[in-house]
Each structure stands twice: as C-alpha cells, then as structure tokens.
Length: 189
View (cartoon, rainbow, N blue to C red):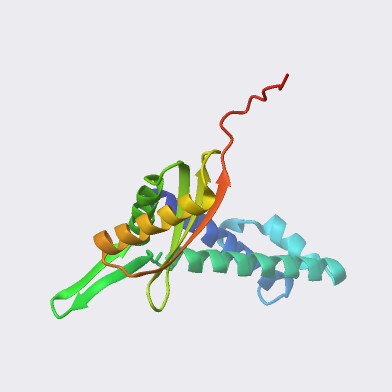
C-alpha cells in the first residue's frame, strides 16, 4: 500500500513539471508573454525561451510537448485505481464469493511443493472461459523423474485448488529444471 504523503508529494511534483512545460510551450509560441507570472517568477528563464527561434524553438516546443505527454500519462496512472486481480468463486442472490490471485497462486505453490523431489516452485494462474489455467516452474532434485514428478504436481494442484477454492482447474502446465545442489565443483579422479 502506498503512502498517502508520498503520493501527494509525487503528484504535486508531476503537476509542477506539467505546468512548467505548458508555460514554456505557451511562451515559446508567443501565446502568452514571458512576464505574466507574479513577482517576476522565472522571468529570466522565460525571456530566454521567448527569444529562441528556428531549430531551437522547435526543439524547445518538441521537448516541452513530450514532457507534457509523459506527465499527463503519469497523472492518469496515479488517479486510475489499481484493480486487484480476483476470481469469482460463486455468485447468488445473497452475494458473491471471490478470491484474490495471490491466494490462488499461494495454494498452487503449497500443493506443488508437497510433491516428491520438488525443491522449489513458482506458479502463475489465469482465469480462462472454462476455468483456471495454472503454470508452474519447478526446480527438481537431480535424481527425480520429470514425468512422474510433473504428473504428481499436476494432480496435487488440481485437487487442492478445486477442493479449497471451488474453482475448476482446466489446465496445469509444469515446466521443470534440475536444481544445482551446490556451487562447488567436485573433481573426478
């Protein structure tokens, strides 16, 4: 969760940069006079902007417009609410039951790590039209059988997610690799 104070400061800075870029474009195009701000604020800088011509003028306007577009995009991103990724488990007249993405992934990873010879696992989930698709990246111990362990991972994930979340699992993709036990190389004699 982001700090409100940090958000206010960041938004204020972006607004100031946005306003400065707009003012520079208006002064460079001679839409407004360089001395329109109160108390002679930035008169020296703005008078230089008002005096540029030709290629320099085009560069000042172009860079300022680019800054305007970037800061506008940042402002839109800041005010747009972040949508949490949730999956609907059930819905009826009394309401809805939803579960967030991280919980589904956590359950899938906990189920997969219980398979024999699995050292580490990371999962991703995606809701498709017919149900949930889970992709796991598993690090296996060197002595393990990839087909056997992969099959066990698939079964455990499907069983756990369907049992505890109530979500139909239509697909479990397992991508495996053997893990290195240690970084020391032993010489064979």
